[in-house]
Length: 625
Ligand SMILES: Cc1cc2nc3c(=O)[nH]c(=O)nc-3n(C[C@H](O)[C@H](O)[C@H](O)COP(=O)(O)OP(=O)(O)OC[C@H]3O[C@@H](n4cnc5c(N)ncnc54)[C@H](O)[C@@H]3O)c2cc1C
Image 1 (cartoon, rainbow, N blue to C red):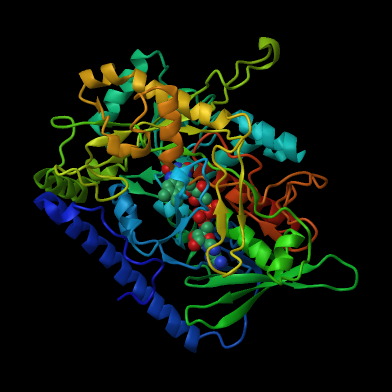
Image 2 (cartoon, rainbow, N blue to C red; image 1 turned 180 degrees about the vertical axis):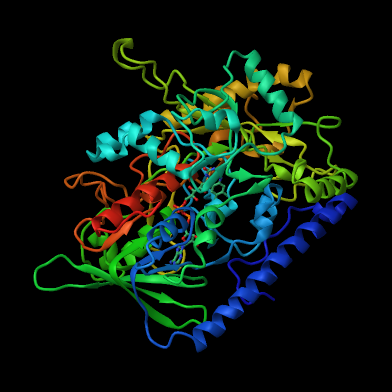
């Protein structure tokens, strides 16, 4: 029994153990997750001992960073570059397990105690009316240790919009490009030579996955035949087209921000990282009539003791777009009605938690593939393991098919005024092709299969949703998982659903071409049972598929939006300082005013890079790189 448990053991789908392949498969996954959990347990026990024996009095540092995820690892590393600056990073989970480095273990690692599973509030517009399952990172490295590794910067138009809404040219596409170049160590010789867009100078490796499943090539050829142009580099001048995208990998392994930024800094005497440390609230002091000042963080250590870490300079919340707003609310920053209901004394009135954006996508349209294109037996799997051990390539060096994608601009995206100016280049639709595995007896063991698969979903995601959701405190357990309302497909004019249906239609239209090359449209009614009475492929059927098989792309953002001082929707100013208080910033995906045109890990790292510069310069400290 695990002494550190984020979630109960996750069940397998019915019928999974009923075939010899399924039984071996389950054993493999169980052994892998047990090994990870045992390691996390040992780390937890060590922390408990340290907490009991170790620091007798509460600690004082220059900066306390809460949450060691994609953003938090960047910040802790950058802020501690000057040996004179003391930094404490608090992370509620344990350290990224080494198994997370193997791209194809992604779906199995997620079953270990590195993520918590929340369910969004049920809503008739999406997720079959029952709420969507959210995999929320709970580990040092955060999303960057568990994600699909696609490294997508977003469109230059996104950042020009950020600059416009914040009034801060530091967020415009030109300045953001410089930040991205500071982040990146591009592994491709040709791409890294394009110095206008790329660099080799940063800590974050960005490269091709070391293996491409042949079914992805079939998709690429179909896309080409349909007239969608191929794009070599989605992180250059434009994203539009279909592409094999670069990923946060090097040498066949994942490179999270834990590995690329934090690990090299761990030996610094001025940086302390405390895992299994869960922040409860920000501590404020108020003198005279001045705005309240954040002076520390109250947290529970591994031994369950409540401690206060004091910050001489600043507290930075990097707990992600679900938990940073929760911490602000627990600290009295939020809307009066919600705080009053929970007896939290209000310090500042701000729309904390409002405006959540994500990229919804359905799972209900898929293509089946069999041998020779897709082979899933154990003989091949054993060979894969040997190949990966030997050379860090082969099928274990990719994950879920998520290295192939298309960025498109539908008719639903308004054209630029009078057709003037440069060609519009902001996509509004992303096609992804997550892989799954169905056993001979029809059983599906996991939601997704990142290693060897025989099903590929055609998953269109709406990139610029007009619907917004929110995060709020759970009245019965305010410090427990917050309430997440995704708001998918709730926009008045039905725009978001229409974009997804456009994307699904493209998949249906491709069925003959794909079938010729071994990918057969799967019309099994069990994929979207609620829609089985409707004519397959009709608009009504596809709308039903979108609403009933909705899934998250894990890109929750914008719950502590940045904006101008006078913007009533803004929680932080363009320098990411929480409005109305002193000494407190939010630095993670929650500050994005709008979600970007693509996957959100790279933009979150970029935000953290700029934040580090802003913080250091506000305190007159050198940047040091
Ligand atoms: C399964 C999955 C797949 C994804 N795939 C991709 C992809 O392929 N490409 C891509 O670009 N993006 C992807 N994303 C999204 C991307 O990873 C996130 O946008 C990014 O990680 C967000 O970073 P963050 O710093 O805002 O939050 P996180 O990385 O989630 O970090 C938040 C951290 O804070 C910690 N924390 C929370 N509350 C507390 C507390 N009270 N006290 C202490 N610590 C706390 C958490 O444990 C976590 O480590 C994926 C995400 C997931 C979950």
